[in-house]
Length: 305
Image (cartoon, rainbow, N blue to C red; front, side, top):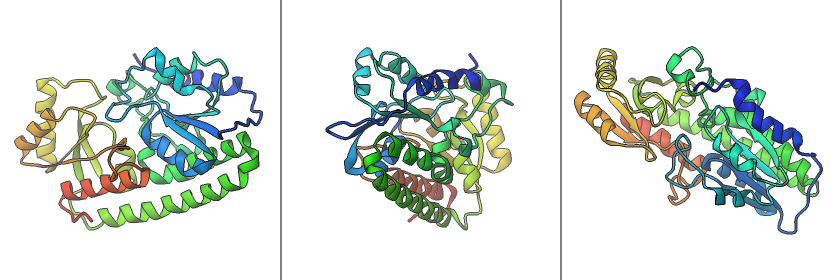
């Protein structure tokens, strides 16, 4: 079922407007809850020692297919701020929020003007799920320019006695994201082949920022198994475009991706759009993005650091 832009924004906007916006204080600091790991990692950089950050999505799970349990609403107990993506990616969080007695303030990344989300509405298959591509966090410049200022502002209003520290951390995080962008550009510079096949259609923001070409995806939407005819068409397109790189993801199946790579004689590499708090290389947003750029460089025939 298609989720129009107004539909996916409505529950979160209603909750955000229902919050009084009054500053809150807690003896153990401000509590922030994020729907996915990249948002939690970014929030930790801003919250520092002035509070705590929890992530609703467990490591290894996909937000596209995650089904929270009623007990997961306890993660939101006492939260002053909830951070989500929108566009259908984490709509399951609205069901949890509905069970919270005192609604927290909510930030939805794709609702922020500076995010400039990419539109899926021109593609009938994608628009069955959402009108916008939700994977905007995979562009560190969008994160820097849209999400970080809004998080800094929200934390400063929620916890005004520590506002100066939030602003200092926000400035430091923005600078770190600028450095990250430069590092990713260097990692991916000088690679002649720019086309790749992704497991699911998650890398368009990343590809747009770093001049790569997501030629096709095995699953248009995570969890939608491709038919034999669709796979055959994908292989034909890849051959016609001279694609020799396949990107798989740890949260999704690997068998089909490996079969396609074998069929094409392509290099296959693992990239992780969500990161993994149990793996030091992918535990932070910056670390995960460096990990991903290196994976793309290897797959496309470049030299990864």
